[in-house]
Image 1: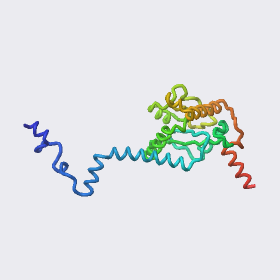
Image 2 (image 1 turned 90 degrees about the vertical axis):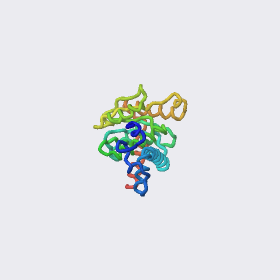
Image 3 (image 1 turned 30 degrees about the vertical axis):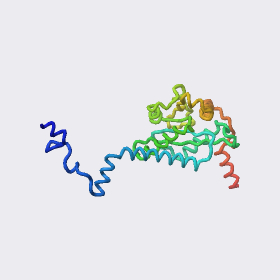
Length: 230
Protein backbone atom coordinates (compact mmCIF):
# COMPACT_ATOMS: atom_id res chain seq x y z
CA UNK A 1 0.00 0.00 0.00
CA UNK A 2 2.98 2.29 0.58
CA UNK A 3 3.74 2.09 -3.13
CA UNK A 4 0.12 2.85 -4.02
CA UNK A 5 0.22 5.81 -1.66
CA UNK A 6 3.34 7.16 -3.42
CA UNK A 7 1.85 6.75 -6.87
CA UNK A 8 -1.32 8.51 -5.91
CA UNK A 9 0.46 11.30 -3.99
CA UNK A 10 -1.09 10.42 -0.65
CA UNK A 11 0.11 11.19 2.86
CA UNK A 12 3.51 12.39 4.06
CA UNK A 13 5.47 10.34 1.49
CA UNK A 14 4.30 12.20 -1.61
CA UNK A 15 6.81 14.21 -3.60
CA UNK A 16 4.34 17.11 -4.05
CA UNK A 17 3.09 19.06 -1.08
CA UNK A 18 -0.50 20.29 -0.84
CA UNK A 19 0.84 23.83 -1.22
CA UNK A 20 2.35 23.02 -4.59
CA UNK A 21 -0.55 20.84 -5.70
CA UNK A 22 -3.25 23.47 -5.27
CA UNK A 23 -4.08 25.71 -8.25
CA UNK A 24 -2.33 29.12 -8.22
CA UNK A 25 -4.62 31.84 -6.93
CA UNK A 26 -2.69 35.11 -6.70
CA UNK A 27 -1.31 36.99 -9.69
CA UNK A 28 2.25 36.29 -8.55
CA UNK A 29 1.57 32.57 -8.24
CA UNK A 30 -0.03 32.48 -11.68
CA UNK A 31 2.99 34.21 -13.22
CA UNK A 32 5.35 31.80 -11.47
CA UNK A 33 3.29 28.84 -12.62
CA UNK A 34 3.24 30.08 -16.21
CA UNK A 35 7.00 30.67 -16.22
CA UNK A 36 7.67 27.23 -14.72
CA UNK A 37 5.78 25.41 -17.45
CA UNK A 38 6.45 27.70 -20.44
CA UNK A 39 9.85 29.32 -19.90
CA UNK A 40 11.57 27.38 -22.70
CA UNK A 41 8.81 28.26 -25.15
CA UNK A 42 9.19 31.91 -24.21
CA UNK A 43 12.98 31.86 -24.52
CA UNK A 44 12.92 30.12 -27.90
CA UNK A 45 10.31 32.57 -29.18
CA UNK A 46 12.43 35.47 -27.92
CA UNK A 47 15.49 34.21 -29.82
CA UNK A 48 13.45 33.84 -33.02
CA UNK A 49 11.98 37.33 -32.63
CA UNK A 50 15.40 38.86 -31.96
CA UNK A 51 16.84 37.17 -35.04
CA UNK A 52 13.96 38.53 -37.13
CA UNK A 53 14.47 42.03 -35.71
CA UNK A 54 18.18 41.99 -36.53
CA UNK A 55 17.51 40.77 -40.07
CA UNK A 56 14.83 43.41 -40.72
CA UNK A 57 17.03 46.14 -39.23
CA UNK A 58 19.97 45.16 -41.41
CA UNK A 59 17.73 45.04 -44.46
CA UNK A 60 16.25 48.48 -43.82
CA UNK A 61 19.34 50.33 -42.63
CA UNK A 62 22.23 48.89 -44.62
CA UNK A 63 22.96 49.59 -48.26
CA UNK A 64 23.86 46.87 -50.71
CA UNK A 65 27.58 46.10 -50.25
CA UNK A 66 29.51 43.93 -52.68
CA UNK A 67 30.64 41.66 -49.85
CA UNK A 68 29.43 40.85 -46.35
CA UNK A 69 32.22 39.45 -44.19
CA UNK A 70 31.91 38.00 -40.69
CA UNK A 71 34.58 38.31 -38.01
CA UNK A 72 33.94 35.96 -35.06
CA UNK A 73 36.20 36.59 -32.10
CA UNK A 74 36.49 36.02 -28.37
CA UNK A 75 36.65 39.77 -27.76
CA UNK A 76 34.90 42.69 -29.39
CA UNK A 77 36.69 44.70 -32.07
CA UNK A 78 36.37 48.48 -31.92
CA UNK A 79 34.35 50.35 -34.53
CA UNK A 80 37.59 51.85 -35.83
CA UNK A 81 39.08 48.37 -36.12
CA UNK A 82 36.08 47.11 -38.09
CA UNK A 83 36.28 50.09 -40.46
CA UNK A 84 40.00 49.48 -40.98
CA UNK A 85 39.23 45.88 -41.95
CA UNK A 86 36.56 47.03 -44.39
CA UNK A 87 38.89 49.58 -45.99
CA UNK A 88 41.66 47.03 -46.45
CA UNK A 89 39.42 44.27 -47.80
CA UNK A 90 37.88 46.64 -50.37
CA UNK A 91 41.27 46.89 -52.10
CA UNK A 92 41.12 43.14 -52.82
CA UNK A 93 37.50 42.96 -53.93
CA UNK A 94 35.67 43.80 -57.12
CA UNK A 95 32.58 45.81 -57.99
CA UNK A 96 30.26 42.81 -57.80
CA UNK A 97 26.96 44.70 -57.88
CA UNK A 98 28.05 47.14 -60.62
CA UNK A 99 27.37 50.36 -58.74
CA UNK A 100 30.80 51.80 -59.55
CA UNK A 101 32.40 51.36 -56.14
CA UNK A 102 33.72 48.39 -54.13
CA UNK A 103 32.16 48.15 -50.69
CA UNK A 104 32.78 45.59 -47.95
CA UNK A 105 30.59 45.38 -44.83
CA UNK A 106 32.20 43.64 -41.86
CA UNK A 107 30.12 42.32 -38.97
CA UNK A 108 31.96 41.48 -35.75
CA UNK A 109 30.39 38.73 -33.64
CA UNK A 110 32.03 38.84 -30.22
CA UNK A 111 31.79 35.70 -28.08
CA UNK A 112 33.23 37.36 -24.97
CA UNK A 113 32.33 34.98 -22.14
CA UNK A 114 32.37 37.83 -19.60
CA UNK A 115 29.29 39.41 -21.19
CA UNK A 116 26.58 36.76 -21.50
CA UNK A 117 23.91 39.18 -22.76
CA UNK A 118 26.13 40.41 -25.59
CA UNK A 119 27.09 36.82 -26.47
CA UNK A 120 23.43 35.81 -26.75
CA UNK A 121 22.69 38.80 -28.99
CA UNK A 122 25.71 38.08 -31.20
CA UNK A 123 24.89 34.38 -31.48
CA UNK A 124 21.35 35.34 -32.48
CA UNK A 125 22.75 37.64 -35.19
CA UNK A 126 25.17 34.94 -36.31
CA UNK A 127 22.37 32.39 -36.62
CA UNK A 128 20.39 34.87 -38.70
CA UNK A 129 23.46 35.50 -40.85
CA UNK A 130 23.88 31.79 -41.58
CA UNK A 131 20.18 31.47 -42.37
CA UNK A 132 20.23 34.24 -44.98
CA UNK A 133 23.45 32.95 -46.54
CA UNK A 134 24.67 36.46 -47.40
CA UNK A 135 28.02 35.97 -45.65
CA UNK A 136 30.29 33.31 -47.11
CA UNK A 137 33.69 34.31 -45.74
CA UNK A 138 34.54 34.60 -42.05
CA UNK A 139 37.69 35.56 -40.21
CA UNK A 140 37.84 33.81 -36.84
CA UNK A 141 40.10 33.45 -33.85
CA UNK A 142 40.24 30.07 -32.11
CA UNK A 143 37.07 30.68 -30.10
CA UNK A 144 35.06 31.79 -33.11
CA UNK A 145 36.34 28.99 -35.32
CA UNK A 146 35.60 26.29 -32.74
CA UNK A 147 32.07 27.58 -32.09
CA UNK A 148 31.05 27.36 -35.74
CA UNK A 149 33.03 24.15 -36.28
CA UNK A 150 30.93 22.51 -33.54
CA UNK A 151 27.86 23.38 -35.62
CA UNK A 152 29.53 21.83 -38.70
CA UNK A 153 29.34 25.19 -40.44
CA UNK A 154 32.65 25.15 -42.36
CA UNK A 155 33.54 23.97 -45.82
CA UNK A 156 35.92 21.07 -45.15
CA UNK A 157 38.42 22.08 -47.84
CA UNK A 158 38.39 25.83 -47.19
CA UNK A 159 38.83 26.41 -43.48
CA UNK A 160 41.64 27.59 -41.20
CA UNK A 161 43.29 29.28 -44.17
CA UNK A 162 46.19 31.62 -43.46
CA UNK A 163 45.60 35.35 -43.11
CA UNK A 164 48.31 37.98 -43.75
CA UNK A 165 49.71 39.55 -40.57
CA UNK A 166 49.08 43.03 -41.97
CA UNK A 167 45.35 42.33 -41.95
CA UNK A 168 44.85 40.47 -38.69
CA UNK A 169 47.27 42.36 -36.44
CA UNK A 170 47.33 40.69 -33.01
CA UNK A 171 44.01 38.86 -33.44
CA UNK A 172 45.47 35.52 -34.69
CA UNK A 173 42.75 34.93 -37.25
CA UNK A 174 42.13 32.25 -39.83
CA UNK A 175 39.96 32.59 -42.93
CA UNK A 176 37.04 30.18 -43.15
CA UNK A 177 34.44 29.60 -45.86
CA UNK A 178 30.98 28.52 -44.85
CA UNK A 179 29.59 25.10 -45.76
CA UNK A 180 27.20 24.89 -48.70
CA UNK A 181 24.84 21.99 -49.34
CA UNK A 182 24.43 20.54 -52.83
CA UNK A 183 21.03 22.21 -52.98
CA UNK A 184 22.50 25.59 -52.04
CA UNK A 185 25.12 25.27 -54.77
CA UNK A 186 22.26 25.04 -57.27
CA UNK A 187 21.24 28.58 -56.34
CA UNK A 188 23.12 30.85 -58.75
CA UNK A 189 23.15 33.82 -56.37
CA UNK A 190 24.52 31.78 -53.46
CA UNK A 191 27.14 30.11 -55.65
CA UNK A 192 28.24 33.45 -57.12
CA UNK A 193 28.42 35.00 -53.64
CA UNK A 194 30.57 32.12 -52.34
CA UNK A 195 32.95 32.25 -55.31
CA UNK A 196 33.29 36.04 -55.12
CA UNK A 197 34.10 35.86 -51.41
CA UNK A 198 36.70 33.16 -51.98
CA UNK A 199 38.30 35.18 -54.78
CA UNK A 200 38.54 38.15 -52.41
CA UNK A 201 40.32 35.93 -49.88
CA UNK A 202 42.73 34.63 -52.54
CA UNK A 203 43.58 38.21 -53.54
CA UNK A 204 44.13 39.16 -49.90
CA UNK A 205 46.34 36.13 -49.23
CA UNK A 206 48.43 36.82 -52.35
CA UNK A 207 48.68 40.56 -51.64
CA UNK A 208 46.99 41.19 -54.99
CA UNK A 209 45.14 44.50 -54.63
CA UNK A 210 42.83 44.70 -57.65
CA UNK A 211 40.95 47.94 -56.95
CA UNK A 212 42.45 51.45 -56.61
CA UNK A 213 41.69 53.08 -53.26
CA UNK A 214 39.68 55.89 -54.86
CA UNK A 215 37.28 53.28 -56.28
CA UNK A 216 36.50 51.81 -52.88
CA UNK A 217 33.72 53.00 -50.57
CA UNK A 218 36.08 54.06 -47.80
CA UNK A 219 38.59 55.62 -50.20
CA UNK A 220 35.90 57.59 -52.02
CA UNK A 221 34.46 58.80 -48.71
CA UNK A 222 37.88 59.96 -47.56
CA UNK A 223 38.46 61.84 -50.81
CA UNK A 224 35.04 63.50 -50.57
CA UNK A 225 35.70 64.57 -47.00
CA UNK A 226 39.10 65.95 -47.95
CA UNK A 227 37.65 67.97 -50.85
CA UNK A 228 34.96 69.44 -48.61
CA UNK A 229 37.60 70.56 -46.13
CA UNK A 230 39.81 72.09 -48.82
